[in-house]
Length: 390
Image (cartoon, rainbow, N blue to C red; front, side):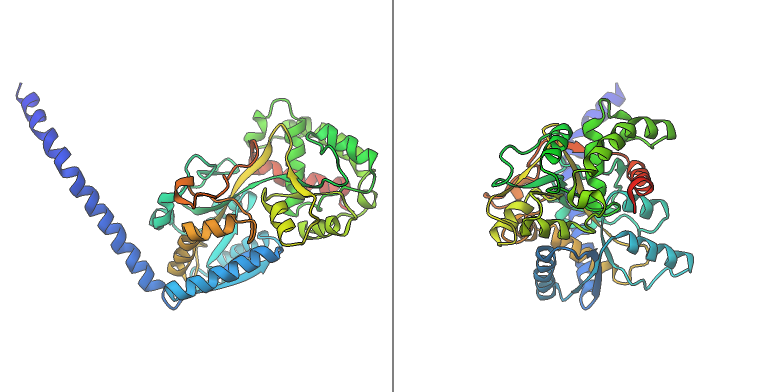
């Protein structure tokens, strides 16, 4: 009886105390963020990011101006061809015992590179809980896992990618929407399609998209790849590629080294289709005049390979506070809305629709198919190189 009466008395007190507790927590978070802003002022943040897109580079140039104006932080984009180079650089630093003063403050990363960073202990402490704008992220999007691996606060979501074909409608009346249709189209139009050479990101993503297309039961793709599963599930892929390569641009004897090169071949009229991982790239490129007016984005009817790309802070960053300020700005409604605008980049936002201007396009343009476990990409790239890497 006493416990029951005590419980009935305590419950209203706890309810009454809850707003005060929440207010205290919010105040503490705000105080911590103000300290971060103060520490970041005057810092120079070296951001290692893929530099193969003029639109992305221009966007980061704008972001750098805004970050400098608002926060007194200098953003320096370090343009890299493949973020794996930055991962190797960080690993060498760790092996040399360089635990502070590192040359990389922020990384644009996902997938197998995140896996390598996480497993090798190359990332700093979890930081996303410190970013005020994380409260605006749409948690229904694939932002909690990165290629099946828990993010665990080690990287902040930045955008959504979905594999699609940028198709010139003047040449392709009925775009292919399956692996079988794509192969048939390529055979009927030899030399008019190709894909970037793996391990370039778009080339490796194309391999995964086709593997998913050709796999009846994809469950094994979402766990560590065993020798038996890999041999069994990839057998149809190699048969498919053997046929496709005979009909590719340059008869599959030569592959473009980048997505930018493939897009240029599309613009020059050498190709009728090119691969993109940005569902807004076709529209953006048509608007800025870098692709013909009839080009549009098309995805496989079974679903488009879909992932989030992220921002991560290395373990030995020199400007950790500045990196947090940059990441938080890039998650702001202003920055996310500009990024999603095809006039600037066309990369889908990771924020909730209600946090964005009313005319913003949804993040998922196509039916989504999740990324396989990163071990599949590593094995696919190695096996592809052994078969076709001439």
